[in-house]
Length: 270
Image (cartoon, rainbow, N blue to C red; front, side, top):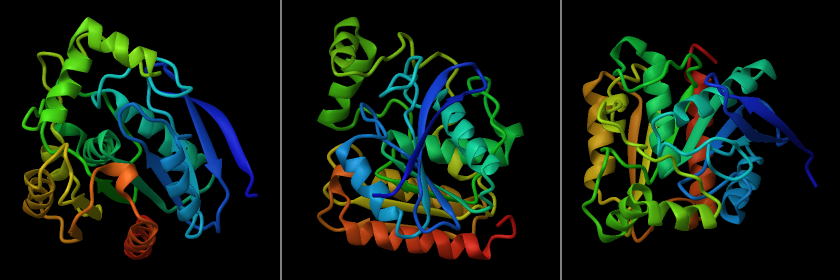
């Protein structure tokens, strides 16, 4: 049984966050960011965490409004501060190789956090300041655009987030969503943040059977990174694979871990 260190982090806006570190083989650390209505302790997330521990150490953080963390979810807008705090903790622990791995909402958070950290002057008035860039970003099943309603399941998600009744349903399931989570001042979209990464390696992974976000999303993220001058970005389209953590097989986890470690080894910041 590998030892797990638990701690409480504090985001720069004062929200307390539950975070955990699993000791793996050491060297690099993977910071895993779960999807909407999840947590770092979900069974599917934990299966991924323990697999990643064969390649490095692993940190999980419960996003605000989720799991054991405080605050309320803003569905990706302020969650960049949560990931910023987790990366800061990783740096304090001495890790020089930090690979962020986000799923669904967590993928959007990972790309936005890295983009804002790399190019803070390009953020919008709706974005907070983040200061802790990762070395590598891996985004699985993530959206490219804000407020996407193009699939039936995403129309349901919007109803849950935008209506008092929907938010009560989510609260009963353990997720606290702030009213007015999506303000009139629109934050930087993930697709725009992907173009702000500069040389930070980016791997985009998406399944052809994803019911939430069609392939226009990963393709747009990949194109944006290339257009932004990122020469170390790849898109993996996985045939027959569904959405986020629930769809990940262990072989894919191995492959993405190896990809992240290889890119981190080549990064000057590592």
